[in-house]
Length: 308
Image 1 (tube, rainbow, N blue to C red):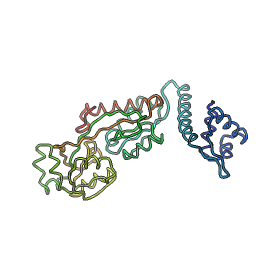
Image 2 (image 1 turned 60 degrees about the vertical axis):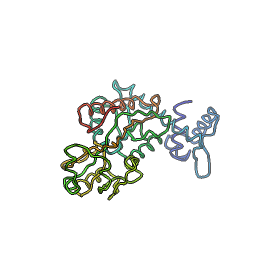
Image 3 (image 1 turned 135 degrees about the horizontal axis):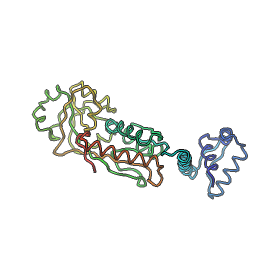
Image 4 (image 1 turned 180 degrees about the vertical axis):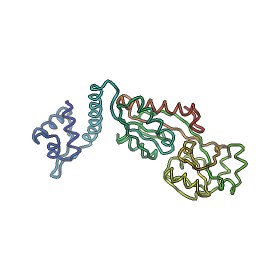
């Protein structure tokens, strides 16, 4: 099996036609068909389903396509590395919004300092969306809040965050929460009747809060950390968020109380492909993520977060 065969197969699947792929690769159609026939013969399985409308991958072909993409990507990075004295390549990483607000800039800064020839693609999205992007191999690594993913992936619990009740001065005054500020915390039962702005029910944080079996007064459902925090800053509602959410609000005074009895804690998991499938650039990015998290917590820059 040759890299040329893999490139031909991947291009055919992407183009949906042997003729279009032949034009893109600047080779003859018959030569391209022979390459695929030889590849199918070597693998002893049918990879493409041919029809009058073009070609589509069979189930075996689709599985092969994903792995072939990975092989070609690593081969390209190997070529780049051979042409450079420094680590080069490309890595795609995903952070959920609250984690991105505190981790993204330090991560990008250290990557630029240590690995200036690695191109970083950073995606901010909800934890559930990041899992889908990992599963479709559009991301190399991501921070998520659940380990309920493919058992073949690498999963590392890194940081535990405590949840806080956050609100502006008016909210704390109207609902008589000033005394709790002296203690720095309040029981979850005291939150029951307070008007809250929270993510919708399919959001991981909302599910985490509702696992405590307390009836919450959700006045607004807002999926978007920046909009949610601006709502809390300007309206008389509170929210429940981790300490990292404070970093998303600038120039606005907000009060925050750690929720106790029971406390609500969320784990940040670092997930990726199995490490033996990762490129050197991806392995470097994972190491930088762990280093950034450790440094932020040791510097007390991540409120109420603990290393695991």
